[in-house]
Image (cartoon, rainbow, N blue to C red; front, side):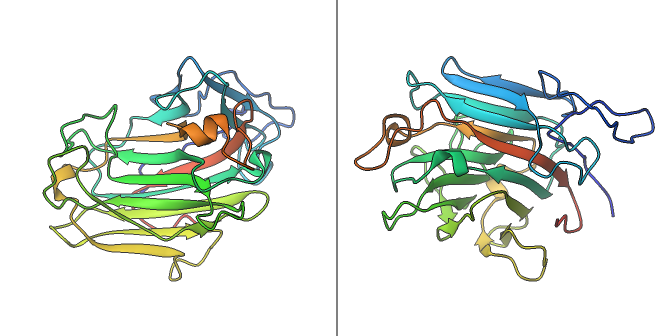
Length: 269
C-alpha cells in the first residue's frame, strides 16, 4: 500500500510516538490537516468540538468539526476545511464520517455541497474558487419530498460545453442513515471516456460500492487532483430560509470527522 496522506479531523494532543493521550484536548484550528486551512465566510460557522463521531477508534479520535451558517447567509457562503496537499493525483481515494441528524427533515430544494475534489486545470475556465470540479458530493433532501436526507454524487464528465460548467454525471439519491455515516470514494482519471468514480455509503465491502459512475471524460481536468474541500459549501436559498414544511437550517451545525485520503487500497471502516 502506498499512502498519499493521513489526516485526522480531530487533532487531539498526542504523544511523540503517536499514542493517543487519555485527556486530549481539541484545538481551535484543524492543525492535524497538513498544509490545510479552515475557511469560513462571513455567515459561515466552524468549531472543533468533542466528542468525535467514533471517539477512541483511531489516534486522536476524540474531536470532530461542526459546520453551519447564520441566517444572514447567501449562496456563496461556506464553512469548510481545505486540503491542498494532493499533487496532480490521477487516482484519489477518500473517506470521512458525517452526522447530519441535527438538520432534521430536509426538502428536495435544501442542498449544500459536503465535499468536492478539484484540479488546477478547469475546463470551464471558472478557476478553483468557483469550479464544480472533478467530484461533488451534495447533501440534500430526498427528491420524493418526504423529508429524508441523503447525498447525490456528481462526477465531472466533459462533453464540450463552453458555458457555465463543463459537464457532469450524477448518481441516484443515496439515503443517509440516522446517526454517523461513513462515506468513501475512489476516483480514477484515465483516458477520455474511461474515467470512473465509485462511492460507498456505510459499506465496508470494496467489491460492493453503493453507486458507480463509469465512462467519464475527466481528461480536461488533467493533471489530476490538487485540492479538496470538506464541510459546508454554497447552501441553497431553501437551505438558508426554509421551504414550505421544511424549516431553515440557519443556526444549525452538522458534524464531520475522520477524513483519510490515499492513492491506493480500499480504506473501509
